[in-house]
Length: 340
Image (cartoon, rainbow, N blue to C red; front, top):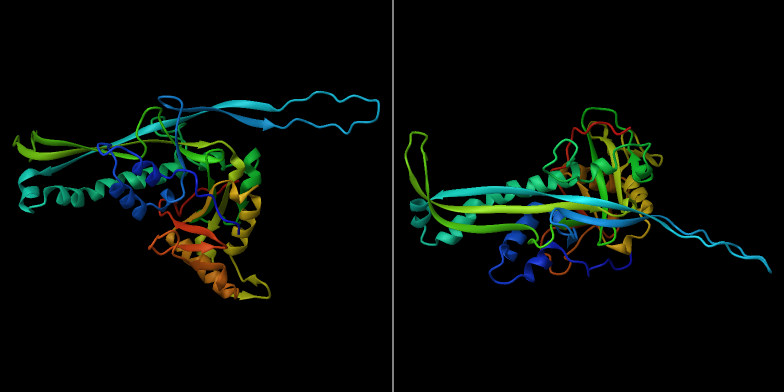
């Protein structure tokens, strides 16, 4: 494949540009990347509204004319539509007994290690919302990818590939090309990008033991304001209705003996994207499905399609399918309703 875009800002890029007293640090972002692989390629941009981003998308192109001699050309124009993408605020407070934290001798480092579960919890919630969020049922959150690719009769059905599963353990593989003009994460106008951490210092926790007792504690406030802008639905593909229980690795006469052929479906997904070089492409799937992709690829005798590479100093284990990163996102459910 041609070289992929590396010029559009990820969360780590934005964090490195902040002032020393910014509310997010590269250390926090690196923790997020370790536990939520959707963030490695995801492009972020500040919205133009305090609650999100209002933008204009093109819905139709001008129609050119084959002109005859001595004949005119009718003027035409493109068609556009204005849409608004909203953000939500995800927040949490972490409280740790001051005496316990001070025992360690390195209070700040110990607090961060103890608060990693809070970071992980918010991280998982952002990942889950990025795929399954729906403002129609949860107005305080933001709308994720699934509502845009959840109906085989919709316009976006061109980018929905039905893997044929009908059971109760269906899941999906996603191919997303992140970019400013394709699909991107958004933050409210004037706000910080990513997870904000504010040390509120010492505070007295009332009724700490449930019996009216008080406790001196360190309190940290975490906040993540985020949304998702699907500016061009052609730059994501959902391979849905993958029945996990039907997957096999017995390959004979050019086909698997049952279930979905995952490598073949992933190739189909790549061909649905207008231009893979328009942003940062990545496949997203659960750990189990990533394992099945590797097993089926080997069964087909095409093990070279998946490579583990050290890219741009990334020392983590990274698999690539035909050059596109395969990212593990366990927030993807294994009990999705069948897309019809």
